[in-house]
Every structure is written in C-alpha cells, then in structure tokens.
Length: 305
Image 1 (spheres, rainbow, N blue to C red):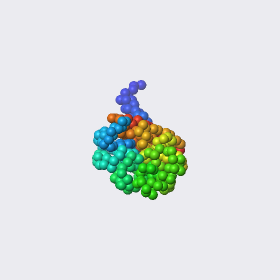
Image 2 (cartoon, rainbow, N blue to C red):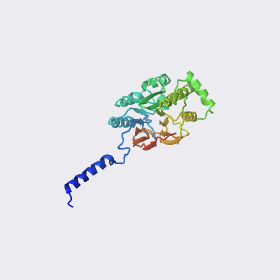
Image 3 (cartoon, rainbow, N blue to C red):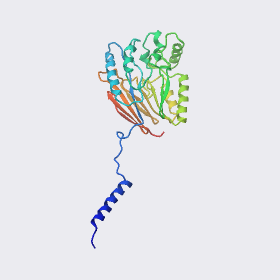
Image 4 (cartoon, helix red, strand yellow):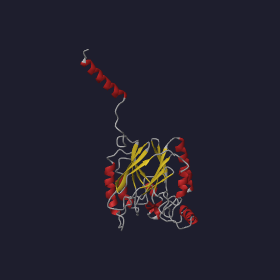
C-alpha cells in the first residue's frame, strides 16, 4: 500500500495546531510580568532644617528630595505620601522644602510628625494647613483600597500652644499614663479612635482593603511607639479588612507581623548622605516594597485572616 506523504504531513500540521489551541504553552507568571493594581510612593522623615547635626544630614535633605522627586516623576503613581517630620524645626524650613515636594506629578499626601510642630507657638495651629491638610487625620480611596491617615500627635506635649485646652488635656493624659513615656511621642485621642472605628467598619462593609499611615509606629511595641499603640492595634484587629500599617519616626526602620497585619516602619531620609524612600506596588495578594538607598525591599503577602 502506498503512503500519501503530503496528506500525512498535512494531518500532522493540523494536529500540532489543534494541540496549541487546546493546550497553549504559558510561561510561569511573575510579579514582574503581572501588572499591579496601582503603585504609590512613601517617604519618611525628610526632616529638613538649616542646622548642624552630629548624626543627621539636615542640609542634604533638599538635594535628596529633589533627586527623589525627579525619580518618582518617571513612574506611574497614584500618590506620594510623606510619613511625617517633613522639617526638623523652624517655620521657615517649610519655605525651603515644600516647593520641592510640589514638583511631584502625583498628588502629595502628608502625615503629621512630631518635628513638624517644632515651631513657635504662634505657628503650631497653622502647621496642618501649611502642609495642605484640611484635617489632621483623614482618608482617601484608590479603587477598592482605603487609606486611613492617623494623627499620632493628637494627644501630645509639643503639638499645641502652651496653655491651650489641648495642651492642658494632653498633659493630664500623659501624667495619667505614668508620666515617664517619651515626650517626643504622642497618641491617638478618643474622638479620633471613634472616627477610626467608623471608617474601618464602613470599609469592611464595602469590601475594601485598608492601609493605615501615621508618623509614630504602633507595632512592634517599642520606645518609638505611640503612647496608646496597644489600644490602636486592638481596634485594628477587630477588622479583617486591614492589610498593612506603614509609618515613619524610627529612622532605623522596623517590621512586625501581628494577626495577619503587616506593620512596616520606613527608614528616614535625613540620616545619612544616602537617600531613603520606596515605591509600593499593590497586587490583590501582595504588597511589593521596592526601596531606594537605605530602604530595604519587602514582599508582604496579603493573606486571609
């Protein structure tokens, strides 16, 4: 029996095509090949002032921030958050550093830090407005992700004019806590805690994922933590929608994982000649923190709680 070679060849080609259609070959996907839902940038403790420092490079902060802005403007970001201590001291320091930050293409979100209130009493109440804030604590959304920005200077010994109602009530609270907590830290007041509970409840009911920011850390419980950090963490743990808490203040950086929530302290920009900031890519199952300069990289898995 003779073989029709052309017919056999045609049938083989057709078989290969059929296999490719039914069982396509796929390369193993990676986080580099999968597009994130969105990206944002985070900077901690720029802390500029025209002053000398033994262990911090205050006068270099404008130059590091300019380089940071130039880099971030090449990226597709939903926003850039500065996590507090934009200045070290002096109302006039804002005049130098704010115009640099204003050069960002992405919207800027500020968090209030303790050093931002290292100004004369007559200016303390004007600090939030100087940083473009309508409220001292606030929230905003990016798609189905809710960002809650807390004010851990709400109860403190430095953020309010001497003799004011808030200064007096903060002193009473500080004394009631033993009077031996670091005075450069602060806490979250009762009214703000109630606001936080409402926002978390609403986010959970809407199926949103939540990232929180403040200047002071709330976990791990160290000397850098907010005065009532344990109270804040206990409230957070009532809700499964919270994914991460990202803050500044401890310039060495830190990380902790507690009941499925990532607590990340970013390293300060001011400390050395080397810069420090990060771009955070948000995926449905992962937060990828890509650090620049001193800042470390992290892969923070979003796991069911």
